[in-house]
Each structure stands twice: as C-alpha cells, then as structure tokens.
Image 1 (spheres, rainbow, N blue to C red):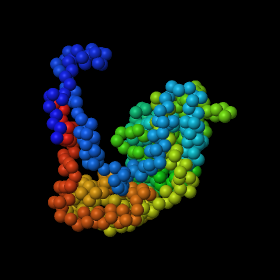
Image 2: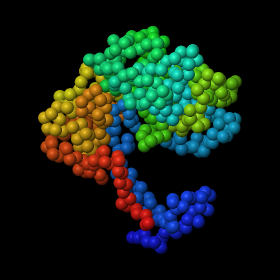
Image 3: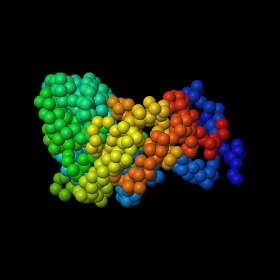
Image 4: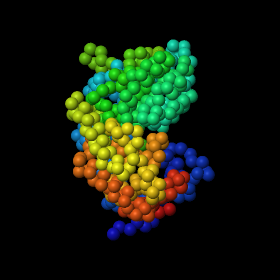
Length: 475
C-alpha cells in the first residue's frame, strides 16, 4: 500500500513561488515553505471515485426537486458536445471558420421563439437568474427610451426568490401582492398595485404551487392597461411546452432554462443557460451582438444604439445551448408536447397517491409539480418537512424542495418530471407513506445510512468543515 511521507512531497520556497506566479506576494501572506503533494494516479482516481459514490445525481434515480425540473440528461448530447468540432472551437476564431456553430445558434433562437411564442431570442445569459436580470435590463431600457419613469416591479408572493432579487439589483422597488384563496394571482390586488410607475409584472405560469393561472389574459390586460410589461419566468416551462406558449398568454419577455427544460445538466453552480425571448417591440433592446443571416453566411452584428450591450463574455455557454439544441431536434414537436403531458401525468399520479397522508392545498388538478404539506405530521408527531426529506435519503430517494413556496406551512414541492416510471412513482409514494407512520425519533434523527449524518445546518453554513479523509496533504 502506498503511504505518503515527506519524501513524496516537493518543497517549494517562497522565492520559487514568486517565480512560478510571476507576481510578488505580500510578506504577511507568504509561507516559508509550500508543500505540493506528489500523489500516485491510483490514489487520486480512487479518491474521486469514492467522492462520486457519496453523491446523488440524476443518473442514480428520480430527482423530484420542485421548480428545478431535474430531468435526465441524455447521453447522446454528451457525445455531441464532446466532439472536437464543438469543444475545441475558440470565440476569437474568424466567423468563416465557425459557420456551423453560428447556424446552430441561429436556428436554436428560432426554435425557442416557436416554442415560447416570441419573436426573437438572445442566447447570451448564463443561467435563469442571469436571464431575469437581462430581461429586466431590457424592460428598464424600454421605458427609458419612451421617456417614462417607471421604478416599480410587481411580483406575487408565490414567485421564485430570484425575481425580486433581479428587480432590486436594477434599483426597482419591489411590490409583492398576495395570492388569492385559490393560490392564483389575486386580480383585485394586482389592479390595486399596478400604476403609471409599474415597469413590469413578473410571473411564473404555472405558478410554484403547480397551478395554471386560468385568468392569465385578465392579468395581462390589467398590466398592459397600466403601460407595464409582462415578464414570464420560464422555470416551469416544462408544464406547457408544446401545449401552449407564453406568447399566447400575452407575455412580452420570457426567460428559458436550457438546463431545466431541454435536458442539459443542472446544478453544481453551472454552467447553465438562460436565453431570453422578446416580442417585436423589445427586439431593439436585445444584447449585442446578435446573430444574423446574410445570404448563406451567418454573422454576428451590433444590435444598434438601443441595445443593452453585452451581458456575457463572447456569446454565452454555447455547449449547453448545443445540448439543448440536440434535445429539441431529437424530441421533435410531438416529443416535446409528449414530455409535457407525461410530466403533468406523473405529478398528478404521485399527488393522488400521497394526498391522504400529506395535505395538498389549493385545488386538486396540478400541472408538472405540486406542493404537499407536513403540517399535520408536525402537529401530531413533531415531524417537520425537513425530517421527511432527510429520511427519504435513507430510502435512496432524493428529497423534494422544502419550505418553498413559503405560503404553505411545512411545504414539500415535488416535481417528478416525465422521466419517472410508474414503478419509481409507486416506490416514492410507498416511502413517503412509510415515513409518516414511523417512530418520530427515527425520522427526526435521519439520515442514518448516508456518508454524513444530520448536521446543524445553520452552523454548517457558517463554519464549513471540509474532509479530506481519503487523501491528506502534509503541512
């Protein structure tokens, strides 16, 4: 067995380190000696293989993380983005040498326009929240170009947290309105909130409760009547894809998550992709550059003086876009709509299986996700949504989103996606029912079978202790 000792470690003096980095290190930050581990390849491979086995990913099983749409990432997309013609191109190459990539992006913009009912798209934003920020930049520029002072953004209390964050970052005053008794937008509250100072209404449809806003046309009329714009949070696009579009609902600007809706990997901090689509009146404000087709050639051009400018180095996360493009081509129109239908079916099936044990508020029929509550368990046994989530880990099932949306007490948001089989849904339902009947002490101390047991989450966030238990660096 290989044992690391100081003989296997290369010593570098601070003088060497300065030569290596090419920069002077302040005295107070210098170390007399730096130890760089010299470790066999076998130890490194085993270390990362062990770490991988401790993780849970979409290839391990269902990932019902509500509002995140953690769908399976097809391996054909992995193969495509690994091809050197895709992975080895450089943004500084001449346009003539990347015509295939530009054609792909040009066609992707048009496919996204058709899927969402928009007139044009930009692929620059790196993720959903970045897309939101880009969209609100365009909203702000649009109103300023008209000489209007609009400094307020209206948002329902069921919105994703990134909505108010994106608006606030641009200096907008965020006005939150309550949901109605049915969990949808309270029309009266909306009409009372919008005014000549309203820049936009930010809405997810279906909302985070998994409910379609049946009065969406009335909502749009109220917003447009005040001169404001309708912004569509595309986090839940998987619930309507191929069935209807935000364009038909009279939205003006839309963000799409390629890493949620179109099969690209999701999580771990990126890379993601959050394209933005707009109706005609907002096209002049799209970020520069834009891709245009001139004859048989694809070129990147400035979008004019009204453009909000570049929002991402080069032109966004192209390989993530390519994954989504491959997914759309492979699925086709019927495949996309079929995915939506199956996602909605799976959500409602799981809801029906557990609703007698966990309350499901706000109506019966849901879309691609639903919110259940552990409030009754908390009252009867002291078991919280957090405890249920932790206990699910012991059964090899990834927990749902918990404590969001906050308008449901002890909320658990399930989104099984279209990938779940009937057997997996039945297994998940059985586990959830079993947890509800278990000894509270067992549930409240879970997980018991994971590599890390229950932690103090507040303390863990403030005082992270990272373990290198399989590979130690000598200091």
